[in-house]
Length: 452
Image 1 (spheres, rainbow, N blue to C red):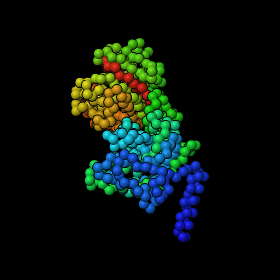
Image 2 (tube, helix red, strand yellow):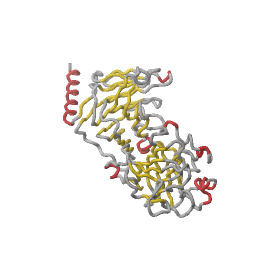
Image 3 (spheres, helix red, strand yellow):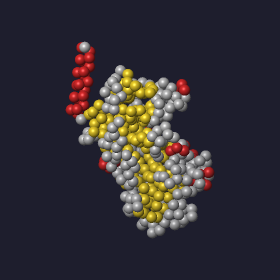
Image 4 (cartoon, rainbow, N blue to C red):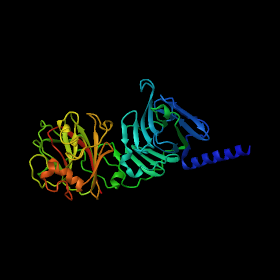
């Protein structure tokens, strides 16, 4: 009787604290009331005040989801995952299609990833059953060691308006701006396993609570990269972190033709939220020609969306000085923008160093096919140049190459490339950003930059 009485006091006190701070418990510590299992056949049960999910061989991804839907909220819970071969996640604003996955049922929507593997993408945001990765964990390297395997991790997810933020053990991880979902259920995932010996792996969830409007948002420190899926916009956090738009979505302000004082009168179309180079049958810089920023940059973080037409070729160049006065495209380090399947340039160069996201003619982009968006879909490129001359290329949030600008290894690559005729190629202290006219129709948008 005394133990029961004390337990009642603890539960009552906890509920009172939640009520005073605007939090509501989503798990009573005893039952799965308010939750239901969807999609797979993995097991969920309550043990010692904890929801325990157990993998089952032959099952697809399985979700324990709330019966209620939520719009704006902050969600907190503790998760334990015991093995680096396991995987889990927390669904937010998600939905269910009972006819999906060949009639087995499909849960779809944003998921905060729990990934104890060597990839370390925990806290990243995955669009389950729909768009794949939205915020890979590699976009925030400082947070990749936040998850601790074998112990409980404190998780926080905020969904307010179009913004979603994640934390693990009070370390900020991901920041997504997206308009796909305004509300939906919350879910706990037990991931499918592909091997019989992985059956029986467990994931533990406890202390699950939610705060709905008004939500007390927790601020992110400045400088964390934001995946902003609203074209040509910056949220206040991005502005406060130093980001600026290089394209406002409706004018050519800040851009001129290479070797010119004004924007090209033909060959480029600006409007409807895009900056588009028109086709001229693949003839390099013979129509409108390349365009460059009026400003120059030394160290920076730049990202851009690009939309290819079949067989198209273009590029985003950096450290462009315009000092060479050459014919054709202006000279600079180039993030290759290319249809790898149809354009012949993908098979030229050395070992694939002219394919999409590569450092053109120098270093091949190491990318998986799943992270290349198909023709007709926008891809996002990113180039980061640090003060120590370390450079990184990203494609759709995944780092695909890195190098040291000006190092001996870099110079050795230049010496066997088409750039060997240019003295000190790629080593200028500063330069313009360039969008290339390679004679094919390619569109650009959401071009944003932050100086480092």
